[in-house]
Length: 295
Image 1 (cartoon, rainbow, N blue to C red):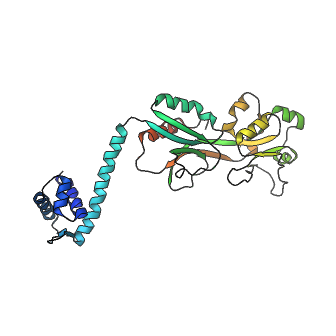
Image 2: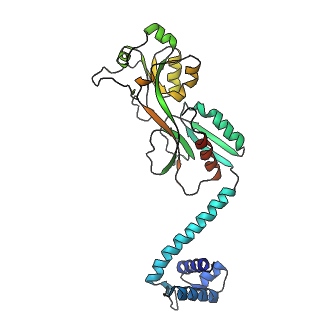
Image 3: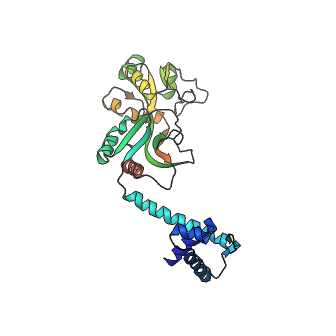
């Protein structure tokens, strides 16, 4: 305790350049501050401060020691703050960004709201590439490897791309026997909202000189492609988590898994910080523990 009090006293003296001002901040007299500094220098065996009639200045040893003292005090403050945050009940508002077709998470979101009734969720469903920090998001769920060094990440789960259409479509146009036959089918493409480019289909075993896939429709949301596919408009290439219900009840029929060679990972992403509000920590732990449904 004496060492910590000496470190805190020295840091205040260095900042104020005055025993009187440092003592006032700590609630002690200038005389007590001077005696405390003298005891610290005696214990260390080195002069930390040059005394003059107008102002105290640090010696070279004092400058070096001050850097260490500040790190120690910062760590002590961080430890105290972590304990205080950990004891606080999770409450407040969370702005969460989710992929537009991530309705599969609705049951987990509802369970989270039941467990933490004092946390308000502001859910933003969008396929665009959001600026997590600039737009004030507390956390987003996104696919692909995290590329922003300002963000922390935690794996939520995996998914596969699926090629699928309505059974009625295959009844009219036939079931393709190989990926190369897709060039003769009606294809529904996803268009990236930001760049306007079409997302390539990750087809396996397709020759490099194979004809390009036809574009019979494109849309910048997966929901639109799902609805078109359900109506028999063509074949779409979509993440499996967006069409689980349609596949389960027979509204859509999938082509062999081996045709689409790409899989992906969904991550929880949030602005990096040594101090996470309890409400955000609760959300991250809740979803990381349960993972992505089927992922």
